[in-house]
Length: 305
Image 1 (tube, rainbow, N blue to C red):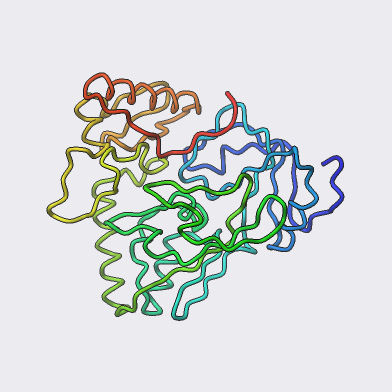
Image 2 (image 1 turned 90 degrees about the vertical axis):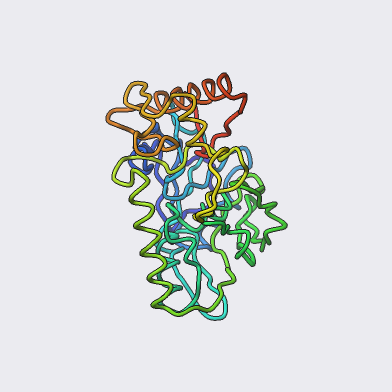
């Protein structure tokens, strides 16, 4: 990279195609792609990076459509230097650790973060999206996130600082979450393991986990996730309004709304980012026409066409 006064210890490559790094397997190139060796490497790199160069932090791509033209930015993806998990009275996890691994390790140590078990993605993404299911959210457990700002400075941000809301947060532009500390109630490891096994079985019975998807496509219009309880109401669930609009199984190119769960968009084979996004917009239009409800995307769409 021109005019960079710092030589990173991690990996910095130009024009990296991002398709293979997203669960939907679509997307063009990032101008630059950086995997820092550790937090110090990330801080020094950001400090040296010219201020006009945009930064896009990327997790494991489980909730992301990268458009076919790619991203005019440095995409930063955390790896091995950010995957530690420390468990005591609280649980601290690196941003690159998968949510499912945090849930399992915490349970083995007798700490309850079981709600993370079925959430696709990594800790950084879970904090960024205030991920949640079965009535529990990151906001209910997060003590603070450690964040490297675009300037290279480090900040501790509480749930209040992050303005965590349903599937959303407010992070400073170009800031990268590097770790998060959670409150976790004590629990019996065997009981926690049994609860997680039940959650996995329930998920696999109702969601197309074998297909290429990015989890839920749209936020629930009700403004909260499924509680998993018997008294759960489905009137304002995204899958329900998509069904009413007649869009379960709808296709465009290689993109399809899953027959198994209509709020899951899948790459049924050879889909482009444009196919996926166009299909999503068609679903939004039909739901608005049939029910007057404006669905909001849950999947992040980034980059250029």
